[in-house]
Image (cartoon, rainbow, N blue to C red; front, side):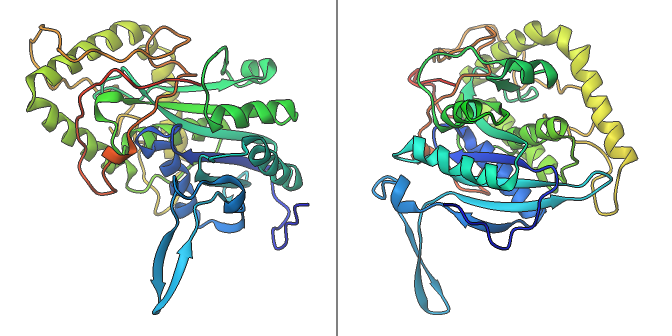
Length: 361
């Protein structure tokens, strides 16, 4: 029995969830939810029992000192509520945690219990995958759902993926079977620079979420962080001729495949978002709109780190599951080596492609 004490009646609540682990390349998705929680000062009202869902030899607890008293923080999943002001205020239920080690069905049922008690109208699950996408282009964001009506109404793809899945795919299907509208938003992270953090992918997810649920999200320093991240990767790529050539190959493939979109609906969508931000600006909020590539305009960034190289790289590109044939499909996920990651504030690093990154929904 779920008892929610101290939680007020919510206004048009939307649940936004992200989980660290297999579904979170570059920590892009979990960082996006953490950003929402921080910017809107979310208050935690519930946490799942860590004993039920986590293997502590895989996700170890941490010990810390609080005024000389030793305390333990257990790996778990926490829920918080934030209220988004404006002309049409609404509440967000933020779910941020770690992909569970066991009892996935019970895990999803417990989250659905909270959604039912709080009157959640839509569940949006954020994820990030490794893909064949260049870091110099806007981050591809794919929106999918298992509900045909929802797909048509919200201009999303109806998922057709078959194969291994993570907690994002399981929770989406659990929502569908429970009659709760659910959407997954996926960011494609360049596989050759997969270490966290990736502020450019986080920014892209938040921009897409902003459009999906029709709220204005304060971006803080994310736009500047995204620009700095791209400059750092540009510099690293320029130091390795083979990586630079490989990035150029990805750029050419991306530009050829997406030129019609870049000149039509995508630019119109970016311009509409810019107008909303300009007309609805509030004191203390950014006046302009930072696009997914970290720039301040609706244009697509076209700077190339390599010049005139045509020799293909020696490192093979990884194969990823895709529905669209671009290599960054909505329902592809990729495993990543979390031990190779760097902490927040560290510069990006380019890693060789080992061709062994699984992809899934």
